[in-house]
Amino acid sequence: MNTTYANTAIEKFRKLVMSFGGFISYEFYQSSRNENVFMDYVRWSSIECAEEAAKQVKILQKTSEYKEYLDSFESLEIFNHFSQLKAWS
Image (cartoon, rainbow, N blue to C red; front, side):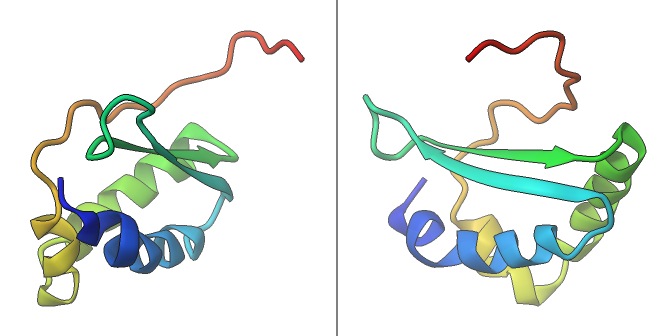
């Protein structure tokens, strides 16, 4: 993945994701060992909202407006929906 994702494309994508119903938060991480590995962590109010957002993103990613975003990927290692079981502080 190139620096376009971290410097430009993520901002446009983040604003899009934050506009969907049920959005709670968006966190963007970079690997401590490999500066070209990133993780987006998005929280939703329900699995239904998460699935609807994923569906809309798949449609929008096919448009020329998000070409730079898609071109910034070398690979996508994991895309899934998770439910929190426990948390500690």
